[in-house]
Image (cartoon, rainbow, N blue to C red; front, side, top):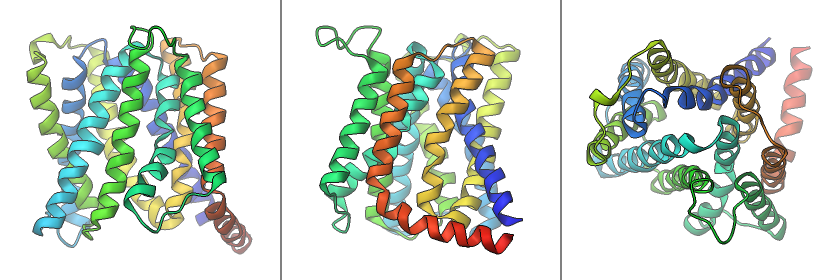
Length: 308
């Protein structure tokens, strides 16, 4: 039964994180973008801190390395990632944003090559990275003579979000403070929310600009409690059961849910270039992670046989 349970939770997590792109797009009609992201993590951070207080051996960071880990998580993986993403999604579809963000595992390999000496990149791995870049270009369809136009800039901002998250993931691994993941996520969320509030004020955003409505409330609640709080709880559970390779595949199932929910709720249409970009990025991931997947597939088959 555990195999079916894992599969079910994997699909639930993919649905939560994929549909989050639709919820962001819907909420942006009511909230200033950076303030919207900050409010999301005000709520999610408090929930995660409560979870860390129950589950973690220590619910607060101790020592220099743990504080550095939380600072990196707050600034890069929460604040920079979500500020760029929420601003960028104002000018792109849910599916396109999800596809560009799915490049994060590929970008993680690029940064790991420079910061983590044990990470080696073969010629096939380089080809995988290039495929990922081709995928982003296919989604953005940039005009070389107009790279900063209103049509291309949103995709570049979403790409900056993916870069921020990937760099943050590698730097926290490089620091390797041994901080429990529940504690790191909780304080990173709260710290990231605080940073985004500062940026929001600097951009002239305020609560008075929020158009409170049913759409505003459900999008904020869904992102805070569903995609963030519930999503990360499922993520922690699956990370322990499946390991980092299989859990990375969520990044490639999530865009399918982003496209589906964007179509159903926002009437967004996925064009052929977005679909092509997704295929290129996923193929790049398979090339980069081919050896890890070879190791994981026999283990997964053995687990299925034991269940049957």
